[in-house]
Image (cartoon, rainbow, N blue to C red; front, side, top):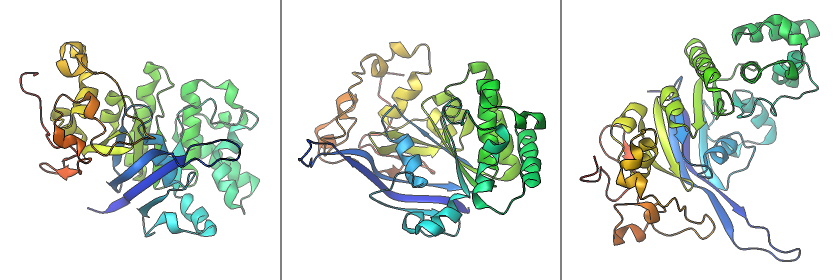
Amino acid sequence: MQMHIEVSGLVKQYPLKAGLFARSRERVHAVNGVSFSIPKGQTLGIVGESGCGKTTTARLLLRVVEPDSGVFRFEQVENVFALPEEELKKVRSRMQYIFQDPYNSLNPKMLVRDIVTEPIRYRGNVTRRELERKAAELLEHVGLSPADSKKYPHEFSGGQRQRISIARALSSRPSFIICDEPVSSLDVSIQSQILNLLIDLQQELGITYLFIAHNLAVVFYMSDTLAVMYTGKIVEMGLAEELYRNPLHPYTRLLIKTLDPEARKDPLVKNDSGEVPSLIHYPAGCTFFPRCPRRQPKCLEAFPALETKGLNHQVACYFPGQEKGNE
């Protein structure tokens, strides 16, 4: 199977600010050796609690934030992270980002026409008439009217604004789009419309998605494969259906159990302390240890490697599987 996206050993740490004349040696371990791949035209979902490193991972891929280390293979480019600025600009046009908040991600002073064609204008050598034609085409593609091109963002609802954001992302004909919680700020009644639009566009244009969310129901609906992140690491990864049916990591199981109204009866959920370890004083062993019902002394020795358990199912746990007596 042709891999469109391949990421290996992605690391990002942020130094803590010290006093005016002091230098802090302490660092926040935001992303800690993340690796994954996405076949062309498919969707990898990344899920996890706030602060787990999902959005930082996405920003690193676009080099909005520079990584400390790692390799990002994209299409014919061996490592996007090694590209000089001029070459990066050309490659970046094939990658786009759909933001979480459609209210703050659109410039309120710009006409919709100028918003959706901004990536095209950035490349230059395009006439006004061509831009107007392209804006009308893009808006129709996402279910809006060509007449909407002459309006401002405040004249639209949240769902319509997110359609404008999607149109803007499509304008440079990208092959890879990062969707960073694109429906989390929308009404539930509108969410399914936006998700179905993204699926239709993927089927029509063959776009590869990295879909980030904390809502498991949404990410299962959208994803072919799923990566579960915790404290900057991927702790489980595999086909979305397989992870839902047979979660092997206790953290994945905890997340899935919260979808079930009866989950509070489960000992794993009921006894969860919710204590996430410090990302500054990063522990040597498994970071889920304080919350884990399976914990053993071995877990404190080193963070478990991501190992394959069955077909395309990987888990970072010394004792993978379900707890006896809790089902």
